[in-house]
Image 1 (cartoon, rainbow, N blue to C red):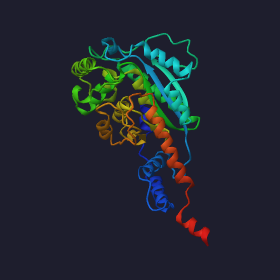
Image 2 (image 1 turned 60 degrees about the vertical axis):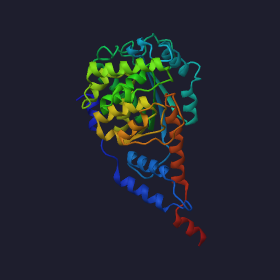
Image 3 (image 1 turned 90 degrees about the vertical axis):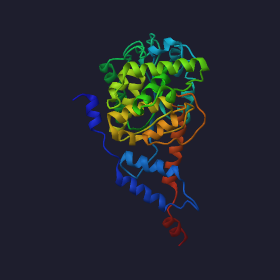
Image 4 (image 1 turned 180 degrees about the vertical axis):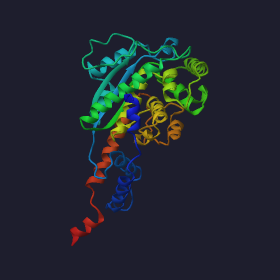
Length: 351
């Protein structure tokens, strides 16, 4: 049995007893006239993930996976392919990207991994080198990668999550960098939901009408040419995915197997969540949505997973930006849950 199969076998349902006890504590807290709505739900889910209603603020890790996509040669992004290189360097050299600021904001340690950047990145300090190839093949003409490489990508993410879980991390924030990867996400989500390219393809980083038209054509062509099987998550990943997507799927699975929560980000990581769920159906319960991105199909994609966004800030950024904001909201909910007195304690203090 390989690492992927072992990890899938280790993912069980959330701890219902811990969730029930967390709900009971919320009902006993002295919150005044109202309740805290979705914040209560966050804590209940987190209790189920960790298996205990005795929660604490989790040690957290932001994983940014970078890779290039063969379909980018069709010039369907507002930015050149070299942007993947530049942004990945920025994370680790100047440390001045939005992802760095967001990681600092939510007190997350950052791991940046090269899963398939089409450039030599050996001079970048701190970059985790797990390059499978120099970008995927053009999925508008055939599969993006082999099934073997898809498994390798997922198992890389599992290894990252396993290592961090052993070091005490209980929350993962996932983000991605790769020019044209919203085209891949559109293919993945379209395949799983039987949605056409027109339904599922958005503007990504706000491309022009002409580029959007071409992007829709290529997404539909990729779905028609490859016929990805929605009953086989690895088939979808191999045919229309990206190496960075495979890594983040692995992080989600590895986190779930270790009773840790993964906070997903925007449209691209939502696509990863569909693959994770196809491989291990229980894994979706270990995922927490964050924000609603500007991609037209994001909201209904989250709904198809049984998830809901907590905020809508009009983001088009990716890179775990929305996940970082959600992590701070989870922190707030956990602090209220831990620190607020129960009604019995209030009454006892009066006596």
